[in-house]
Amino acid sequence: APVILWFRDDLRVGDQPALLAAAATGAPVLPVFVADDAAAGDWAPGGAARWWLHHSLATLDAQLRLLGVGLRVYRGDSVAVLTRLAAATGAGAIHTTQGVEPWVRALHDRVAAVDGLTLHTHAPDLLYPPGRVLTGQGTPYKVFTPFWRALQTLDPPGSVPATPTRLAGVATPPADDGLSALGLCPTAPDWAAKMAPHWTPGEAGAEAALDRFLDQRIAAYETGRDHPGVSATSALSPHLAHGEISPRTVWARTRARCPDEVARPFLRELAWRDFAHHLLHFMPDLPDLPMKPEFKAFPWVDDDRALAAWQRGRTGYPIVDAGMRQLWQTGWMHNRVRMIVGSFLVKHLRLHWRLGERWFWDTLVDADLANNAMGWQWIAGCGPDAAPYFRIFNPVTQGEKFDAKGAYVRHYVPELAALPDRVLHQPWTATAAQRAQAGVRLGDTYPHPIVDHKAARQAALAGYEHVKAAQ
Ligand code: FAD
Image (cartoon, rainbow, N blue to C red):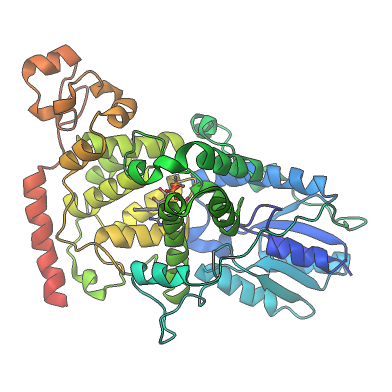
């Protein structure tokens, strides 16, 4: 009988344990993707990720066709679709990839409970499956550094297996809904047109991004990775989020091509991804509830105008605005700037971290439930291993330190481009003559700061007193 190969966020053919296992059965393989927003609930893919997913599915279909089978795509309830396909083809087994998201685990339980179907879940897209990196007492780590130390003592995450050159297909594959019927890609207006030039979704694009990084960037990664004006990082995140490349492949190839001291700082960041997924596996409330429960007492502010100013990149703080505009224009934001804009939302504006988490979810091409939730909890001070709340980033000094020459701000906030470096990150300190010469009119061509740093800092610390009292 045929076997169903059920794709979700593991959209590749190389180093794909579920595909290898399906191929190893020797049976005809029916590759399937189901767009099931209802199962994902609040965490159905956001707008930017849907655009990516559309293109990723198209390239996966092309890759699979080279192996002799096409991808069938459906919209609807996964359990109903899979049951229907099993009945139509006589398949009794489904091969898929393990996930850590609570909704994925619940969905897998539902599929596994269907009479006559056997669900085989294969190694998740992580360096090590959750539960593999544990403390000496066998408990999950809640702090990254010891997790990373322990991870490095394990055998390497494994060599990359050869991809089958051919898969046997089902003689008469059932009709599918077709990619365009999934409604993933925006049409009118096609807001994604502005993002497209920055990216090549799909497995070949992921491989090319890794090669480019290892050839050109990794040597300067450690010194450059905090500077958003330099392309020093891998930009692999959307590819990893959609499973277009396996983290084990990234690890193995980095190890094979780079000396240890060059490879390690990068692999450490890759291990943060494992850490986030490990946290979500053991703490399924991570996207919704503060890990430090006393943070429920924080007096969050309700301010739609401030939220909109943040979302649109009109806060009057150039590094914050540059970051939010990079996100809107490209679907991605540099990690250092994610921390700066996150801190600004949560501490300067005192808006709930979940509002930031939600906006990122809808606008990031790399939106990933575990990484996003951990990132927001970390920046809000309520996550495991978080920076202490009272350490409040100053957006001016952060800008001056990490975008000293202003390349990043000038690119994304062009209305300030002609200001001298010295005042670029705080345009309100420019002299009238400097502003006039640069064509900057505060409150007209560029906003006044929506909050005063010192006053905002005081208000945040006053709010934190409620958290301390609830401890
Ligand atoms: P590189 O520096 O080249 O790192 C390589 C890979 O390691 C990344 O692609 C990513 O998969 C992983 N990685 C790196 N840093 C982190 C980190 N801090 N946490 C977890 N994994 C990491 N990353 C996402 O993939 N999806 C998200 O939704 C997401 N939301 C975030 C929200 C906030 C508030 C913050 C502070 C960070 C968030 N991150 C998220 C983590 C990080 O910013 C991105 O992974 C990184 O900027 C991606 O760029 P890169 O691929 O060039 O990274």
